[in-house]
Image (cartoon, rainbow, N blue to C red; front, side, top):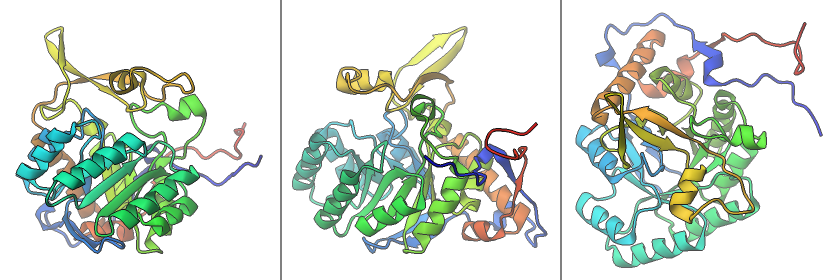
Length: 347
């Protein structure tokens, strides 16, 4: 056993200090990014926001809405779509703004193989998602997927430390998802005691990834547009959103009416509700690590995305970042929480 006494921070623990700027308007800010992925060699241009691969958020309707907005934001489709539905979507809509999502189960691989066999164009982006990216078989799985799909951009996770980011990139991941426990409907930190403050995780993981020409996606912990600015300021290349996109017309699931208002049920993919829906219940060897919450109906997602992008542009103007790429170089974080003298507290 050992104790690390270095301060680790979440988004709520800091603010971005403003700096002198030559920008006269938010219109002057370019919030797009351009990447060439290390392993696939594919080029990407667009706003680096990804809708999470949760069955209430990573939907085909969300992907269609993102495509209509033309910002280049992408959607990680949830892995529970039937094969025929996926084939039909890719045939009609293409693959430009979606990630095909899988876990590491045999059934996920079998469905992917069937998809690739029947789809003429296949896929160009793959999201490999597990709750615990530290298990040795996971890195081996990423390596196998890289060998199998050499020209496909692979995003894999989740992890929160630099050494595992390096492991996954060297195994073939182009983008590593960073985050354990920060999501609004994730209870991993409460159930297991495991996690890492998201801001510090992004800072440390981005540093590790960029040294190997890899990228990171901050996954979880964003509740307001300013959190995205902090994630990008910390070095994130992409930011994945779940709760901030829940409750919109493009989300799947029924709306419940109560007291004259309509609500959607938003739940974590490791929650009892999700496992009951997709696996017939919580297996006897595990516990639920997610919860369900009610989210007020929020209408079309276009208005919310515009609000998010507006906040991001405004953050850039406050520090003089003409491009989103410059935000991390222009960011100075100011701590707004009290620092304890030691891990046990100070008197």
